[in-house]
Image (cartoon, rainbow, N blue to C red; front, side, top):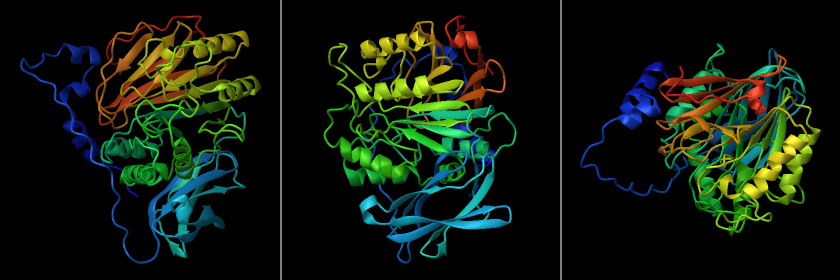
Length: 470
């Protein structure tokens, strides 16, 4: 699987509008055509899949890595027909085989298997075999297991949302990330990818349509190269859960959860007595709390009372228990909707009677190292919520941009081009070192900002950024 060439990246950059390569503040001052009349974009055509070629079963999509811990890894594939499958795993001169459960129509010809018995911080290459036939060309893809539990280390975490309505929309981003994943230098390289919702735009709970949309977005060469080598973790937002702004009253949400579980190789999903896509995992001494802001959500338009909820009572209790028990020095709380106070009419700004007591609970219990992540808004931005909590929101990976609006909590923002974020966390220092970056596909890094431990805990102000910081 080859990554994108630099020439291709330059062509991608050249295809972007000129305003995509300059600061938002400058772009806003550009003169507008006098007779410009906004045009409503035509609705996107439904996604379809290429015809299945006759003959033996072959990989339609994947392989895709999911959760990769220090001693095990999850891997996902989708076949074109019912088949048996296995993973052949290579470590230096040795190899072994891991049998996957048979692929069949009831699970959409998808399979997720767990590779156990791995060693921390170790590289493995692998081959996928369907019904005795090898599927991957040389050189084989490889992955590296996570550092040991509670092990202090530096790690770079890419996060983003909103892939766009077409397969091609995010393809340049996947190609660039695949190339950067292969880098050995610190700048640009990264360890994991967090998908924070709107991972497709099926806008439905219909099982077969959901399967088509998930699969279609996994067909681009860049995504296949990226996800075959990178641990990928996902939560959903409205468009990959159901229709726009859908909530816990959505009919057919059980279908959406069934297909979500088929297509993402997360470490877990919800709890035995509380369905949902939420889960937690630890990498080194950073703990990730990936939240479900849809399955138990009250309608946005409901009155904001103590009973109105985005997470649901049981998920919120689960989150609090996890934070109290966590030994990680840094805790990342990821949700599809923005946490900040002045957000859209589909964000935490309409759920403050759940949000604010939770913020107060964090302070009451002196929980340190909390960072909030989000997506949804089709721009990338940083917020200092109430002058206390750091939130980073990233996207769009492929969708059209939305314009930034005045917001007293926002200290930086970018709203041109395809965008993604990076958290650079180093827990070998005392206190841990935290920095964030925003990147634009085809243009490289737009901004890097060090966040002090005092700023992270609201003891110091985060100054506003004017334009891009290179």
